[in-house]
Length: 129
Image: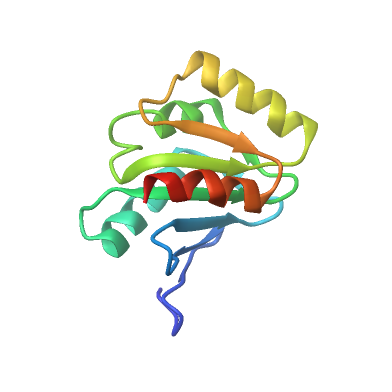
């Protein structure tokens, strides 16, 4: 469902196209992300982005979990179909460990970086707008 501010509200995330051309995905605290949630995000991008690629900013809430299958899907051609580049804002040590694992094992085909602050992530993404 799209609300008045063009935010698409999902059970696990809020997705919106920012005025600066970045798509922001705010993943709710305690969300469990599996392949179905990843596919739901891909469908949301399809509805919102009109088959164009954009820089994606994932702001990950505390205590979010992501299955191995979801991480694998996220790095596939289908999972990256609307992504020009991806930045993730993470703060917890477990998320940082998973981020390193993701980069070494899944090796996404688009530029991908992890940041501690949203400000740093946005500054990096703006280079790709």
